[in-house]
Image 1 (cartoon, one colour):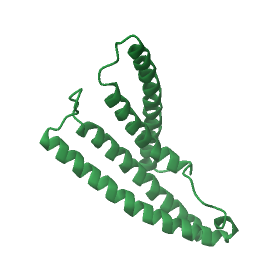
Image 2: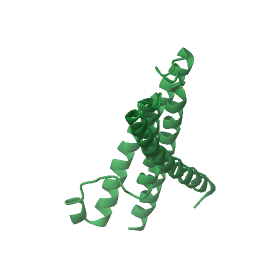
Image 3: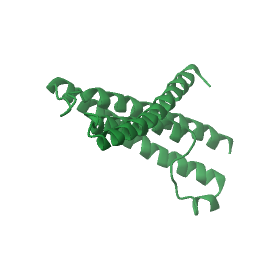
Image 4: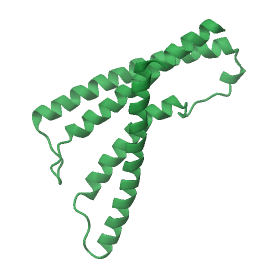
Amino acid sequence: MNAFGKVIEWIMDKQKVIGACCLVGMMGLTCVDVVGRFFRHPIFGSVELVGYMSTLSVAMALPYTQKVKGHIGVEIVFRLLKPKFQTVLDIITSLLSLGLFAAITWRMAAYALDLHRSGEVSMNLEFPEYVIVYVVSFCFLVFVMIILSDIVNNVRKLKEL
């Protein structure tokens, strides 16, 4: 693996940990908030915080899920095809995914910049929402890099077949 691949792998590993911490944080915050509501002392802004953590946990998990091929796929017919044709189809779908998620990454970064310039904040906590959108767009960038890596690996595999 080259240096770029190692850097992406390192970032992906850190994202896994942050995503897991967000899941645990959501669970803890929700439990404490429910108990607090029972005693008439809910946690102010808990709904916003849980929303932010859920967004981050999904975004942080995308690159790792792509790397381990954990996304849902229909493989009933796909497995019946010859290995060379499977690889070609995998390259085509990866190229389509690359285009889609590169566009999403670009537009999400542009949206974060718009939020940043406008100074928009969340309703209750007055947290600058552009921070979350920037982080999510970075996660999508890492996701795009993993897809690109998969394409390169499949092209190499295709040459060997």
